[in-house]
Length: 124
Image 1: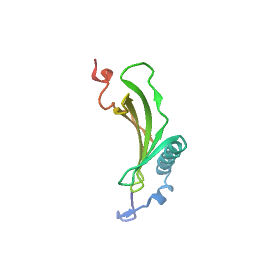
Image 2 (image 1 turned 135 degrees about the horizontal axis):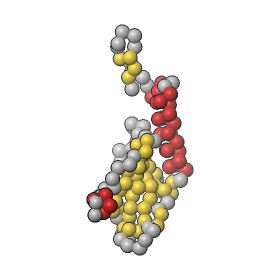
Image 3 (image 1 turned 180 degrees about the horizontal axis):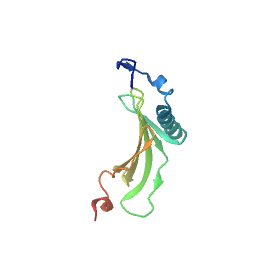
Image 4 (image 1 turned 180 degrees about the vertical axis):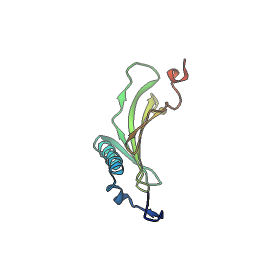
């Protein structure tokens, strides 16, 4: 993050300094809250080779019988960048991920489409 000094020069502001700015503090609090919630609800943790950590919540069974067995929320924490993001993964009966739905990025809620798109999102 940069901040303008007197005379128009740019000054680097560290993440620790961001808490002095109200909007940045709110974003930082949301991000930390999301990570703490994920850690407290974790059923499984995976650490990837690049250091990112995935926290898996307990899988919820599908509401109707069919090709989808259920889904679970996954929260990723990247210690190198401080980024926290979460998504829902849907699974089939052979434990493959069949659909992903992004949910949040650094504590800010997202409302994007599923990947791949659902029939409703395709307009069918």
